[in-house]
Amino acid sequence: MTATTVRPRATSGSDFAALSRRVNAQDLMRRQPGYYTLRLTLVGLMLVGGWAAFALIGSSWWTLLVAAFLAVAFAQAALVAHDLAHRQVFRTKRPSEIAGRIAGNLGVGMSYGWWMDKHTRHHNNPNHDDLDPDVAPEVLIWATESALGRRGLAAFVTRHQAGLFFPLLTLLSTDLKVSSIKALRAGVVKRPGLEALLLAVHAVAYLGALFLLLSPLQAIAFLVVHQALFGVYLGLTFAPNHKGMPHPTGDEDYLRKQVLTSRNVRGGRLVDIALGGLNYQIEHHLFPGMPTPNLRKAQPIVQRYCAEIGVPYEQTSLIESYRQALRHLHAVGAPLREARSRRFGMGA
Image 1 (tube, rainbow, N blue to C red):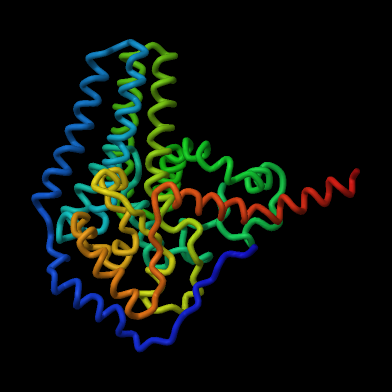
Image 2: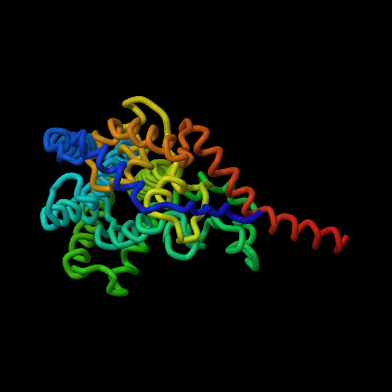
């Protein structure tokens, strides 16, 4: 089974312009300083409160509960960094970068510059097999063509990647840190010295707190639980968005390239908070600078417009979004499973 391809429809190129006029008529691109003041304050309090509880509890296995709480706080800080990168919070570049490095590098130990470069390329060509770094063949494979020819451990992972998906998310935090360091060494980041310094401060403060206040075994347990849950939570916020959706050819107009490759997740305010607004993935990709609280308001406008011009608009529940992603992963690994079955049969 090969990845589904988006089939472009002839268009005058004015479809997005017409939609943009409807959205702007509702003033939905306006900044929301009150919302972000509250959100940044709450995330900051979560981080401060979590580390304060860690210090007060001290050398105790109860700190593993703090590790779980801080995993949520770290993921929320990363989601804030995402909004900062899109200039949803501040209108200009400089304050966005300063706050982004504080949240990303200093707060969670991830290079803001590296992630911003990677995420920009993703937005320019979502789900494109060659141009979107989020579907590039790495541990998980999202296109059947990339799975062919894999051998050894890589082939084993691909054959069983649907079942291994959630366990592998526990390693996402580690991957973010390794990728950040590689980007700094490769010169991908604009301010490598500053970003490296902030990452070093984060690492020293984080590991110092663990190994100074906890026993060695408790410190290792805290590290594993915290980083694993942080990776799982962060991965679960991004997994529903594009995984298992069509892969474009690159010939589509802007509106279709963004809508046909994205999936929205239904839910109430709790889902909005848990996913940081990324559950409105279609609206976010069409208007990446739109503040998060306005995405909910833009959603019915975009959905109605897509129905008018005959563009499929994918929206599902949170659980079903994961099912679709897992089904896609399972299907991608099918050729390797079939090839292995044939070899086993021949050997018998």
